[in-house]
Every structure is written in C-alpha cells, then in structure tokens.
Image (tube, rainbow, N blue to C red; front, side, top):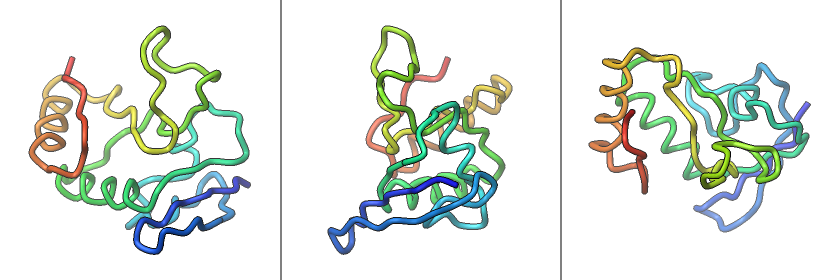
Amino acid sequence: MAKIIVFNNDTDRMESYYRGESEPMPYNTNGTLKVKEFRGSSKSNILWTTKRTMQSWNSQRYIYGGPIPVGFAFKRPYEGGHGNQSQHYAGVAFDVGQRLSSTQRTRLYNSAVDSGVWTYVEEAT
C-alpha cells in the first residue's frame, strides 16, 4: 500500500491517498496508470505528484489512442535513473515507450509534442 501525496493545482492544497500497487493513480482516467507503473523500481512507500500531471497523462493517453508502457514516473534522486544525466522523475515526468517499436515511439513522440500538454518532450531515439 502506497501513500500518494497529490498537489491539487486547482485548490492549492495537498491531498493524501492510499492505494494498492494494482490500483489506478489518483485522478487517473480509465485505469491507464497503475500505482506500480508510476512507482517503477522506487522503494519508497510515499509517492508524490500533481493533479495537473495526472490530467496531462490522461490527455496524452487519449491523444495517443493506445497503451503507453511506463517504465516509471517516480524515483528519488538517489534511486537512480539515467546514470549521470538529470534525475527528473519526482512524480511530474514519465519514462515511457521503452518497449514500443521505433514507429510507435515516433508516433508517441509526435503526439506528445503536438499535444501541448507537456512542458518538455525529450527527443525520440
């Protein structure tokens, strides 16, 4: 069971939720993002994010129109990530598409850039 702290951008308040690994994240539409996907390999029992991040995920998932494999969206800096690169997975960014084909990844990338819901979309590789 994870404690999930969500900053609600609409009310400027923090909200707490308790969810099992197979349950959807708070503010998640149609169960497209489970707690275990959001957590990834983090060992933390306390996760955090924002309502706006979850709404952006919902929009991106709808725009893409299919499942988006999530490696993780939450890691504390000392839990690793991209080695010597930035550690930006503190609940407001997603490592996605690692198991997609090149064509699917390009489609996901283009839909993310075109969507306007993300501040930064890393270049497709």
